[in-house]
Length: 316
Image (cartoon, rainbow, N blue to C red; front, side, top):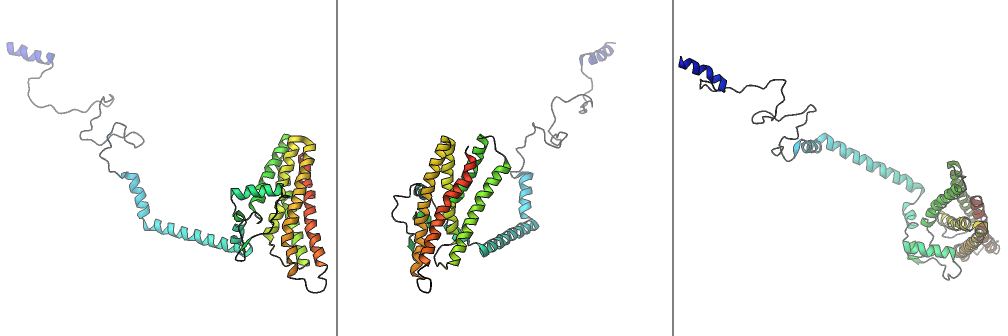
């Protein structure tokens, strides 16, 4: 009777009489786990297929699956062959473009006109605005090759005309905006007009030199450079008008026009009139010096007209 009572009380205290080992039971499906059992199971993963933040990745390989994919990409012979083929096509296209450009424009000669530095730019700008005190206007040569602009302030360049043209367009847009007259169409018309006038001026100069059979070292790039220097005077003129009104505009116009005319005459004189000794023989040779002088003076006198034409509508 006593043993029966004892066996009935054991479950009440949470013990079993049997010493048989108890197997681990799975938790109920509905109850969440307080701690994940990672002793023998695979690392837990979320619904998106990534490891949970609590999983220790210290045992993973150093390269990782991403690095292995990149290495496999470069190790793939098809991918390497495609990269090599693409590079060869790009190099062939570059060579073809350079060859086509070289047929019409000498790239090496074009580089000569952009061989400038900050010191040359400052000296050239001062020469364009204050040319009256400059004495030596002759372009220097080294072994029958003219020195680059950075070594000779008298050498023509295309850097200043290019930058001056862009600055003029920006300044024109600002002037039109101040007057509430800005529009993309008006700014585009202003830029195209300024560019077309330079092209017309260069073509007229080339035709005049051809008709007079002037044998000089003036190239098309030289004429573009000398014609493009007017943009510096145009910037100075527009700034004078914006800062000081109509009076400042006309004062700046007169100063920049006179300075540019003096600069053009002295520069082209060394190029055009110095070639008289090479072709002073033949009929009509006595009239050629006067015609060449007329061309030089006409080119210089044309600059104030263009400056006024391209800047007068920007200042009111």
